[in-house]
Structures are given as C-alpha cells and as structure tokens.
Length: 349
Ligand code: TRP
Ligand code: SF4
Image (tube, rainbow, N blue to C red):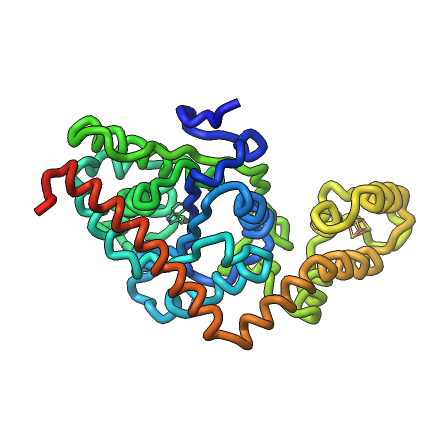
C-alpha cells in the first residue's frame, strides 16, 4: 500500500516508512519538558525517527510571539528542550535538530504567505482563539500582529522543509489545516510548487496533572519533569491526590478517582495495576505504600533519561554543536525551497 497523502490526517500506526519523505515538527522553547510531553509527543517522535527523514525545530521565533518580553526565558529553554529530546533517545544521527531563528528562509516565506491569508481567517483559527483568550495578561485587549500571524509562520516552518507528515497533538490540527489552505492558495496562484502536509496523530494521551487537573503545566505546579531528581519525584508523588474518601487503610477505595492509580497505569505493568486496583477496592492497600510503589515505577522510567540528560548538562558544547550542525544542514533544504518559491513568484533575479 502506498502512503495516503491526500488525507488531512493519518494515525501513526497507518504511516508507511519512507526515508525519502520528510517529517517536520517542533516545540516552542518556554521551559523544560514534562511527562505530558513524553507520552504526548516524544514517544511518537522516537518511533518516527527511524521511518522518515526527520526535522525537529526549536521554534524560538514562535516562542517570542507570546514571550517577546522575556527573551532570556526563550534563550535558556532552547538548550533545555534539546537536552530533553536527546535524553529520551532522539538520535542526532537520525534527526536534524535546528533553531528556527537560524533559518532566515522561514521568515522570508512567512512574508510571502502573509498575502494569502486574511485577518478574519486567522481570527477564526480555534487554536489561536483559545490561546488569545488565555493570554489576556500579555496581550490585553488587542493581540499583536505577530501572534495573530503565527499560523502563517508555522506554515512556513512546515513547507520550508517540504514536510509530508507533521506529527502533532489534537490541539495543532487547526494549524495544519491553515497550512494546507495556504499551500493550496499558493499553488493555485503561482503554480504547483508546495506540498500539502498531513498531520500524524499519535495515540496522543493528554496526561493529567498530579492534582487531577486535565492539563499538566509549569504554571499549574502539577507537572513531573523529565529532569526531576528522585527527591523531587518523591515529594510530588507523596502529595498527589488520592481517593479523598479513604481515611483508614482498610477503607474501601475507588482507584478511578485517584491520581496515584492513574499514574500507575502509565508507569507500572498491567498485571500489577490490576492487582493494585483490586487491593484498593477491597481496602487491602495503604495509600502511602501505594505511593512508594509508584515512586519506584516512575523512577525506573525516568532514571535512564535523567542520567542521559546529565551527560548533556555536563557537555553543553556538544548540545550546541548538535543544534548548529543541524541548523546548517536544515538550511540547505530551506534554501532549495526558497529557490523554488521565488521562481514561482517571479522573484528569481
Ligand atoms: N505550535 C507548536 C506548539 O505550540 C510548535 C511548532 C512550531 C510546530 N512550528 C511547528 C509544530 C511546526 C509542528 C510543526 O507546540
Ligand atoms: Fe489510590 Fe493506591 Fe490509595 Fe487506592 S490505595 S486510593 S489506588 S493511592
């Protein structure tokens, strides 16, 4: 079977490996990665790095659209993000890691594409709409031109690398859709030049926070970071929310409303989870012991990641070299795209 590339999205289990096709994905560098990122996107990237030509962007320019007043945070986060990615097993020999601001071609494309998108269309983008509502503290009553337009710049990210597939979470679908529209408009005006990308949806579980909040995040203070040390993991798990109806050890519990059980399902093997569930329901399990067991399971997963991350923390030059080498390589591809685009637009002087 051929890869189906006329669909708007495809499930990760349905993609056929093809080393001639490119994948592009990225993150805004605004902090370290937590286990929500691990289950939500990093795991699928690890799987895809062997199947396609993979580009991973550290989207510092996009991060500035809502952090323009905090360049230091963005700068610091660039290396943090990359260390997280390397620590989980993304391999710089397979993946081209690059920094968005090192590829001026993306900025050029953004300007060209901005003629092909109306303000009304950007204002209707559901992801952008939600984000603007959440960021009133930054934007006040009127959003910046740059933030409203970031979907255009993201379309430039994707098309610059001729990406066939873009592995993203559910929340990014409106951005891929907008990119596809820009591509169609471009091709219809200037002639067949750009490729319409397809979103690759992973199983994409959104991990709840330790407090039971549907979202895990730094500002919510409920996240487990890939770089957390054992003591931090202990502290966080010991204060996680359990079944509030359980006072004594032999009270019958309800694991379905317990965050410790929820996390056991992510980190502890299936047979043992079944056992935990039964013991809890029967009132034969203490919450403290249950939490201690979870600490062990979590640490078993995070310890090798943390160790690998330590190596990179101690070798910052190696990290920067990976990013700069990657950016150099990425730029070769970007330049080819710009050449094609400028030719189609009659800007080939
Ligand atoms: N918007 C993405 C996010 O907030 C990050 C991103 C930037 C991205 N450029 C991209 C994702 C290109 C996929 C493709 O997470
Ligand atoms: Fe949660 Fe475990 Fe306590 Fe049951 S025993 S409520 S699963 S922590």
